[in-house]
Length: 593
Image (cartoon, rainbow, N blue to C red; front, side, top):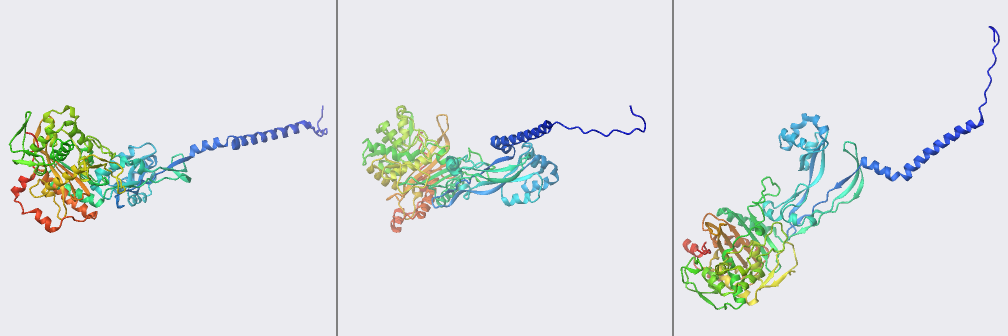
């Protein structure tokens, strides 16, 4: 016990055991070792996995669009090419508070503020398209407003310098650059190329922060060089459009082809559309009628009826036929000619387009032989161009032909064909009986796919006889070209009504021919459907389209005239009166009445 005032004892020092210090250092060392072990596992063992997990949260792979390959004509002139454009998009969460700027942006885009709001609402919570593929200058004007939440993407847009001239043939691409019509669709894999890829950082809102590098370069699409000549295509289109408008027709199509190589120099359809502005595009109105539309061709089939009969010996080159009747009755049908004739040889059957003469020839010919001739020259089957919507038409099996069908087939009823098929078939007559498969690609001077389908002697006779069709007195005299010999055939067929009969006043008008007749270089088929005004005959409506286009093609391709001016003037003879021209131009009497 201590007492007040007593002195205090001094504290005693306590000595800790030596093992406790060792334990502390051991714990610290073990902790450091554990940290080092974790760091080793994180940096070395699990490093790739963790880096990948981080990349998934912040790294993004951005597509690098490939430049779509151009489409060129045979001379290298552009028919379709890709041009740089920009797409505007917004982050709605950031863009919504900026509604004070919406009227200004809408005005720059040429839309209403309500339409702008609709576009924003149509997107997601973080992304909405504001405008796709607009001119860079226009996009720059809008981006200069520096509105938060408004961004841009660099893209390419397809542009067609020729506009409507070749639109049904070329087709077009969608906003994502994929071909969805015409050649753009048929050769999409060739044209589109392969997209590249670059790696970059984006924040948690999806906004780009930095581009770290390119993982794969974009491979541009390949160039597609066509056999089309842009100048000839233009002439063919304007001539066809003029005919359709002048005669107030429903539609028209034309094909011009090199008889030796099968190269198509022009393929046009009317009506057409502007592929650069497709707000009014309707596939049913603006398809490629040269390969998609079929029709009963009428008298343009008569040369093949004669070829089949000559080939199997049913008739001879000097055979004649008595057509001096108002009605050649076959079964329950009355076959008539527009103008009554007497005795006609084969050249005159073609020149005056005698239905009675053609029917008598067909009735002498075994149906299997006529059927085989039609198939050999390409009717009833697709051409091999690979165009979307192409049809092969129809040639019924010969076993089902009754006597009336045999007669009608002779002058182009009971089957359906396309303008392309007519051009290729007449090309065989022009090319010494050799059928050449049509192509839209620029080729060498020799065809890769050809076949002898008509005897050489028969083809030569048909060329001579068809040359008479375009002379004075022939039904196709309006197809004659000064300075050149021309061969061809007219056709005017009454449209079927789909009920086993025919429309009274609806016809298809056709002209198919080649030039020069003495050494054919080019063949052309012209079809104008449903003319409603003027003289609705193949020799009046379609033949002038041939004349204008073929004349341009001969001059464009450097084909020299083969008939002197004096000889041509003498062959033309005295001018005809309007009534004489009407009588000689083939009328709608190709039908059996």
